[in-house]
Image (cartoon, rainbow, N blue to C red):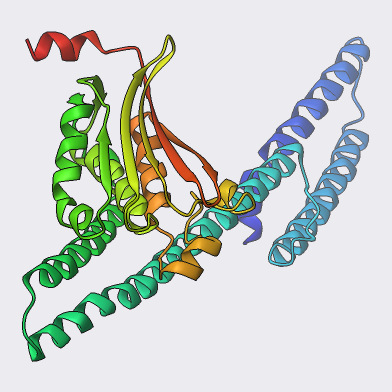
Length: 329
């Protein structure tokens, strides 16, 4: 920083000095009562005060140079209230930037972990298909493995869309009964193969949601129920309307979830004792279901008793948007 540029920022001090000197000179001239003014003394005082001003500006200039050199270390002393406030603001921006970078880094790690686990998961049905290709092709087995691949692909697609959710949803009046029937029909082969009974107690209940995303959420819960329900078990799907909300209940007679795992089943990547013991799992399905539910204004709760049953409840607001009702008439 040049000295001339420095002076452009010190104009208030220079102007203050000039105003003070002019006022002092005016007072001296007025006080002289028309008599002669000692101009020599006057200019001598002007020179002395100018030298003091110059010395002050030089000290300020050196302080500014020293502060500029210390900026990188963060030990620079503020030379004004404005500078102090600016430094605090920059410190806050730096902290926010670090937090944002940490969030981005965590998000990248999440994507990496999911992709790695996804590749491991999808390798299993692909290997089975290769095996079926070398032996007699069983149609049911083929359909089952293809369904697994489609499910894993759907998981990856919906996970990739989480960050851009607000650009890809359409809130409509959805019928819980119709969605439940479509999901059960999709898994009909698994129901038959494992001889799992389906008890459909859901009635025609309208909720406001995105049908595509809601179908994925319900499908993920039913898929989990089928995965952890033994042969000959039962899955019950019920719709309930309470004074405060609407609910879709999915209850299975499966192996259940341990009490220590239950609070964490919606965490990203959490598989728990059940997932590790009975089947390989990415731990992303319920995480995605809960995340998508929250974005749609719903939420999921779960209760379970080990060896007896597990029940998932999707909670929907009871209040309806009158605009949607009018639009769909």
